[in-house]
Image (cartoon, rainbow, N blue to C red; front, side):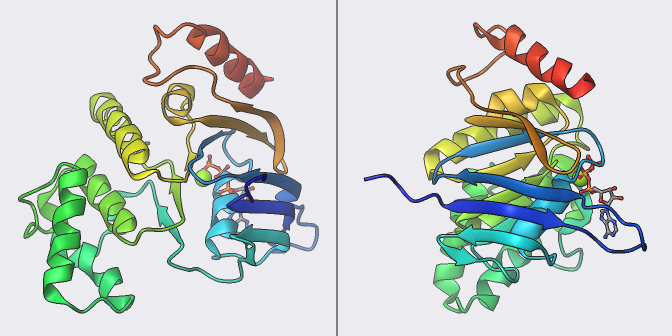
Length: 250
Ligand SMILES: Nc1ncnc2c1ncn2[C@@H]1O[C@H](COP(=O)(O)OP(=O)(O)OP(=O)(O)O)[C@@H](O)[C@H]1O
Ligand SMILES: [Mg+2]
């Protein structure tokens, strides 16, 4: 029996209609992903990547259909969690613990022991055990992104939507977080859509890699053939990197 796709994007069209002659940002876009896919999306600046995941997240109106588990997306929901590029996505007045607990409480989890257990598990997962009582201003950029990931993961979303979450980090921290995210995704069997400008990052993380161009056209959409862990020394890496580089420039 064929497995039903977890996410289906059918004839997705998005126009912000902000000027009389505004164009469609996404024009009849179609793709689907299965449970456990780690989809990296590359694309030039302004091609509509953020618009796409904002639509999937339920932050934007759109034409066409976006289905998660067969249900049409009409508003944000706990089944779709977004992690952004900005270091400012945490509540600055709440501690690390408070940041992770807040959406869980909103979901109705009130039991203190249960909350403590969830916070502990997710801080361990992202390597921040012991930082429960720190405030965001006491953390580095990389640590803040880890907390944002932990907060999203703790809600057990069906899909994690990540919009360039490592773009503002230094190269060393970025590589480290890529490796860790890959390990977490495997361990927790996550389904992820990960937007990036960085071909290396897309290849290291993605089980599938797409290249989007203007209006949501998919110039490349392939299963990543390179076995994990992917490094620049992996056989086939150079050819694949060049394929994406050429397509991004062309
Ligand atoms: N709220 C908005 N209102 C009107 N136009 C918008 C809005 N948000 C984005 N756009 C336009 O939609 C287009 C795509 O923007 P989007 O942010 O989705 O691109 P992107 O691929 O994420 O770019 P980048 O790689 O630079 O983040 C751009 O032309 C942008 O000006
Ligand atoms: Mg963007």
